[in-house]
Length: 207
Image 1 (cartoon, rainbow, N blue to C red):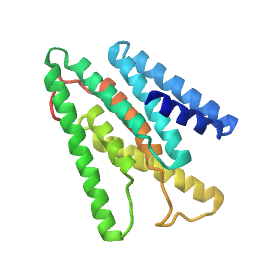
Image 2 (tube, rainbow, N blue to C red):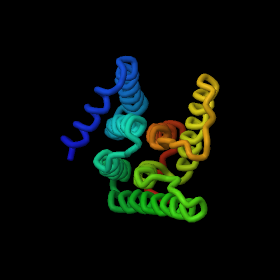
Image 3 (tube, helix red, strand yellow):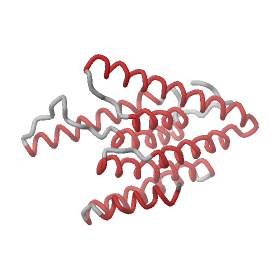
């Protein structure tokens, strides 16, 4: 599994321009360093791993409009490990609450996908985005989930507004949007914010 998604990422990077490759490497390095500096412990290391996976997902989705299941599965596994680390003496409860949040958010995104398809007659949310929502649920508290989604949405709107301004092309309702490009980094940023700016509860909770 690791060999498969590593090959996929390598192939994706070989098709990018040198400046893009440099930007990706810098983003990886800065996010890992930020995770370890702000949380110089096991949770910081897990957050650094999350950053690597989220940037990889963003790169692949931007280039191929897909979110590899292997990357999503790795992020989920790492998220459960992070929950166990944070849970300390209540590992079982921490894992259960993380899994419950992930399942609930997956159901919410899947329901939105079904409703959109019923109303508009076409797909609006990819299955990859639905699976990525499970990653957000495992890693983020409920209080942080809407913030991460809003960060992703605002970033997407900003990018497309800039593209329209410089190219003059109008973004239409049929324009494909690689939401994972924005949602994946927002998940890591949400984790970083909740880990450094908010109080982490001493006991795991479905919050």
